[in-house]
Length: 396
Image (cartoon, rainbow, N blue to C red; front, side, top):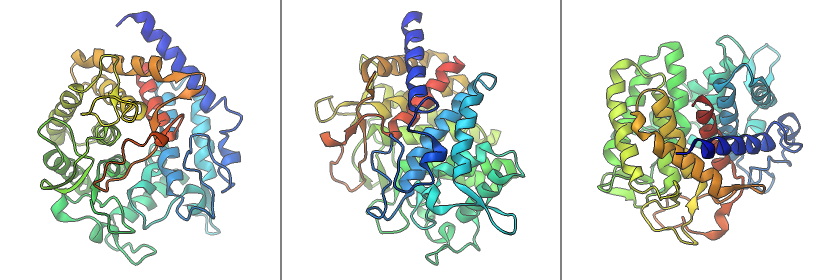
């Protein structure tokens, strides 16, 4: 790809990221977080109690955006301190110190409930990455890890998640929803929300059991939700009982989980994961359009209702570029990764923001992936992965 196009895309993306985050007069964490009646501009589902009883979305897609910002800092620590400070301001707004000196997560501010399910834990990964071990962030990461892995922990609903919401027949994956009986129990979304956090914390404390479970969970997805066309079903209970849609963002969550987990998995697990990553990328690349983007439903033609979609495309760029940087994918894939990032930046990013991010869809078995009112601009589930992809371009 022409170097001029690549440079122009990186510059354009950097300006967008700064407008959205560190240069925004609205998205100031210490002002935004303490008020339950204010919301970041990327929160298109609006954290506005009392109309909304569950605030877990606040942890979910704000966590994704903030993790992307932290990726920028890690890509260039010397020049990226302002991004570190921005994320720190956000995390510090979510925590409080008890009278006995313990640091705890302010559940209301963090959008966390211990009984909802996978989405509540996205920001946990950021606490883990931010921690230097024996500090406030590490204390909170350790407590959230305990909620997920300790067989003696009982949550506010009287449930021990790792005993009652982690079925053995589903590869010991956590059910995506804990609060209700959803038709499909394992969603690709939930793989990303939980496994990178568990893997990174387990690696830091030497918890080999949990690292083995992370490998088992990813194996179950690879063996159960992979379709003959090379794509992955959004959700499922078994090979015979799947949510029969190939939603690009759902597949992106799974791919992102793989590359984030592989950073810390033991060496003996990596060959299997590298093969799974290559299989994943080879499968999705068959559906990449000439301009580098993927449609919302990857296996269907792009239309006004099934548009070329920004969040899924950003995820694919991140997965491919990070896989190459880490040496898990051959550099022969670089053109496809650049094509995705540059194409997305040229086609969907303008002065108004990052367009055509599909706000939400559920795994009900019905087609709720083509509702035109769900295509948004600057929605966090798209802006976050786009920032992550941008950070990979900085490494390049």
